[in-house]
Length: 153
Image 1 (cartoon, helix red, strand yellow):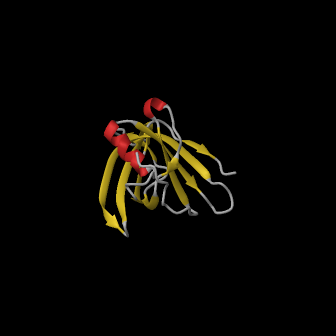
Image 2: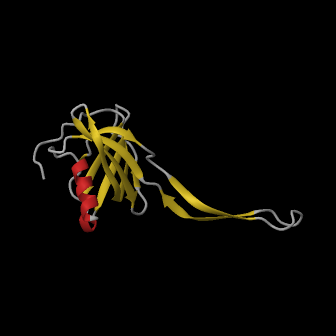
């Protein structure tokens, strides 16, 4: 593992950190890298099944909902592969089929932000090319269970 520190800038808005979590034991979180793009932060859905009666006089449509399905985290990161940015942990995690903990912090510039923390497995890791002297990686991480939310302080 490279020993140089992260070269990603500190910024207001969304900060993404990652920690290795083999066998559910969470390590020290590091910034994932320079966040280039991000998909849905919270995405939940339920499978829906609708039952319509044969006649409309006696009964209304019945709607049955399944269990909650959590959407995946999707983000693009500019990074230096020789640095110790968290994106390197994500690449190692997909290679080893191990879990990581991802923390998304939403900052408003005056307080520490709301944190959404989830244990995840990386299902997709693509390096799509070079941009401004950095590599561009696109990552998809599937949530394992329900994420936790910590309110801003």
